[in-house]
Structures are given as structure tokens and as C-alpha cells.
Image 1: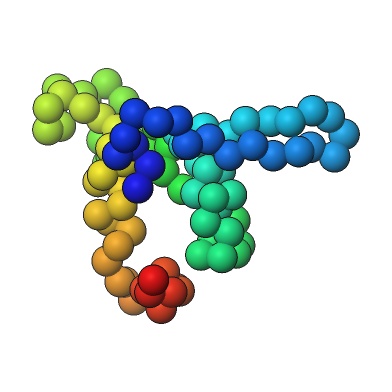
Image 2: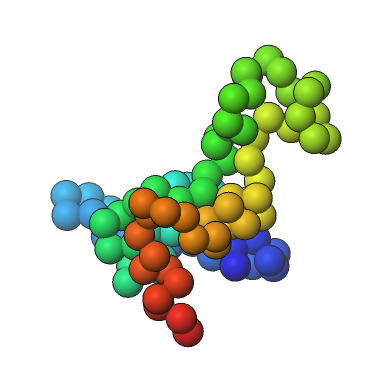
Length: 95
């Protein structure tokens, strides 16, 4: 998973009308660009500014550890549980 090591795992893309562009693992575009077969519709992935649901921006004191943003670990824990009404293609991909 991204973030497990100190190595940078950026995706580099070639723009049609310009130079190369680097997409870091903190970008919401990283997940669909790196795991193309799992995210064929280009769903946005984890990024640094996902707020906790129902938490106001100035209510950081009330959240665990004083944070008001979802960590990468919390995001993947949430995503790796099947839910009614959501596609299960991640679970069907297996290895």
C-alpha cells in the first residue's frame, strides 16, 4: 500500500499538449492512475483533505487525536468492506 515505505511512489503521465506531469500518492488521482484495472471509471481515491463525516472544520478538538481529516489507513479500512448498493469489483479482482 502507498505510504508503507519511505520510497516515493509517484505516477508520471505524459500530457497531450505539454510536458510530463507527476501525480503523488497524496493525490485523489493516484489510485485510479496506478490501479487502472480496479478503477476503470476513474473514481477518486484517498487524498489529504477528506474530512470526517459530520465534523465541522473548526471541531478538530472533538475528534480522535485532534484530527478532522481521514487518514489513509482509515480510508482503506472503510473501502475494504462490502456495502449494499456499491460495486464489488475490488473484491472480485482477488490477486
